[in-house]
Image (cartoon, rainbow, N blue to C red; front, side, top):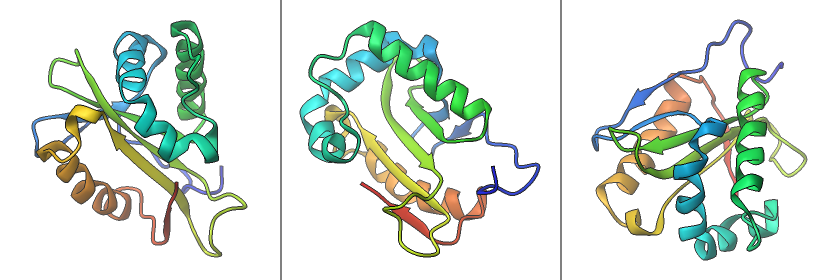
Amino acid sequence: MDWLPEGFVHPERVDLPSGHHIRPIRATDVDIDFPAVMGSRERLWAKYGEAWGWPPATMSVEGDRDDLAHHEAEIAAHETFNYAVLDSAESELLGCIYIDPPDDRSPEGADAVVSWWVVDSAVGTELERALDDFVPRWLADTWRFEHVHYFP
């Protein structure tokens, strides 16, 4: 797609100063994604519900797996990106980072739409602070975005 430089290779893994790391999400992450999302559902709905209708109260494991498979295919096609925030053993998903092309809700000149979240138990922790510091720098340094629309 033309929102990324030709030949752009998305990062496959990035270590965070908190001891966690991020990598593109996969359908096989459903066993750690589903409890993370549904365990933080009310806060996530308050943030994403109006914009994305997500996560629905009735989401099933199968529905989550389908959603993750869709994300995985979009990542492979460089259409959008969903990075899982993981512990070192990848036994716990602690949040996600979404990187999307600008859309009709984006301000003029935006080159990406980005959002991230952490699970309820990580709110206010070193991990959340690390992401808040890391993501904007990473978008500028690695992705070369100059005008990010942070939404929702």
